Image (cartoon, rainbow, N blue to C red; front, side):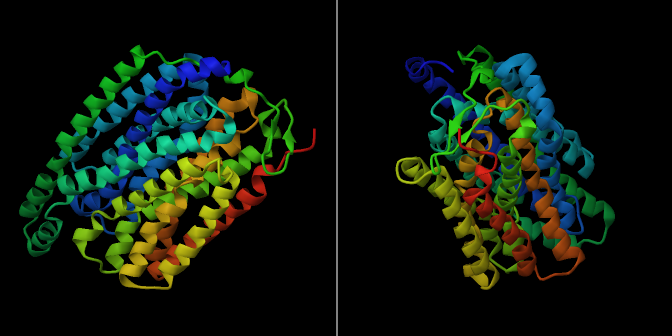
Length: 433
């Protein structure tokens, strides 16, 4: 790594670029919260389980593309990887245009998968970069700063896309239910899908322009192969020793599983809250902005993280507190009704806020030359956002379990595992040196 003096000199620009990238990640990712109800309406999908394939297509890409992304980054470098990722993101956005014109759910899922593939490359590059441009023990604070940008985008996109895509949704639904003529019904749906064109063409243009900006920006490459492989755990004083294979770092794989559950609960609270709110019969005008409520709570959590980590609490302690809060709010949401239940789900954004910032640096800590590969393995855990909404949808729609109990069965095991990782899992494989 660069010397501390050089690091201070070069850290600002990488932080600004990383924050801008996290804003892009948030905008694209949290668009799914609006796309789920929009595509269910516009494509006349029968169940919520079908609509949840929107999140599946996005997050499953991380599982398949994370390791290839690591190989690509090793070949072309961090900076070129970002450029390629942004261009692919623009291509994925353009696929939405023929998808809307042909009313093809498969094409929509293809576009979302391409976007997810691009995000996999970008996340595999940015997260370890953000973790090691400064002291590893304060990485959670840096990721929290970038996370503010991510979640700020997440707050904006449901408002923007909610107005663009879901305005007059009640009237459109009523009109569709009252119309028996197939031609007239198709005309209504075609008009609804035309709302996709302008936003996604605009996004494609922005992504390509950002790729050009990155190409000409002065971003220093960091050789992760030279990173220190002997690190000390701040809670226990235990040290991890340099190994010869990535499979000799059990805390990495436990961390990847923790990321799986972290993203699972984050997506459940951010995307599924729309469905949850409808089941609770919350006012539709409130429900369409529900993802924003969750992400505002996450923003608050990130601010707390920036202030508190590592000055007041360690990354591990912050993770424990957040997971315990997640368990508490889940129980409140399940065993209450109406607004109390609905806003308890929104408050899960606060519980989830510091999980990723704490888990990621703990998972890749001490990997040295395996940092890129380890990062890719951690990124594979994002597939939790693909699987968990389908688990919830299956419990609710296929097994006919009450939607609140289905929520409990999905959320509680995830939070319990995160508690395990925060207390013990991140130390597995550490030994006295």
